[in-house]
Length: 114
Image 1 (cartoon, rainbow, N blue to C red):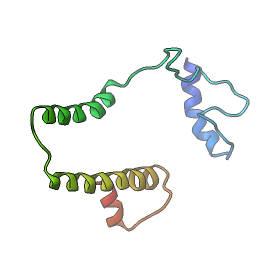
Image 2 (image 1 turned 45 degrees about the vertical axis):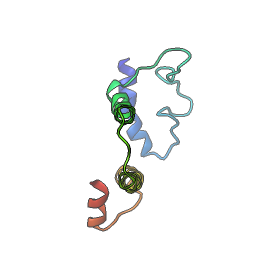
Image 3 (image 1 turned 135 degrees about the horizontal axis):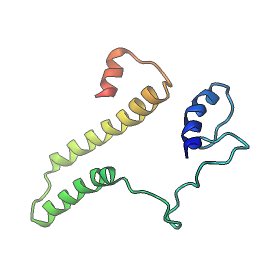
Image 4 (image 1 turned 30 degrees about the vertical axis):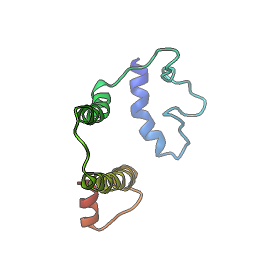
């Protein structure tokens, strides 16, 4: 297991050598462990992320079942924020901050951050 932890740090150095790394393993190396599989049961559930994703829709469903009806203006606001959120995650966090795929004006970078 200690060897696996050491390989994680070494893989950053190996990336600099421009060798192709597939799933954190260099060609010819064997992975430290098998990838998680639902059928094998060797996976862990991240309960924090699962709850963050599942609880808000359940709250909305509960409100609908309790008799609350949506306002059309709420739907418009939903789609505007849905678009802006997707843009911020895809163009901002993923492309701009993770991959450093491009540089933008500081106001654009600030807008993508928030």
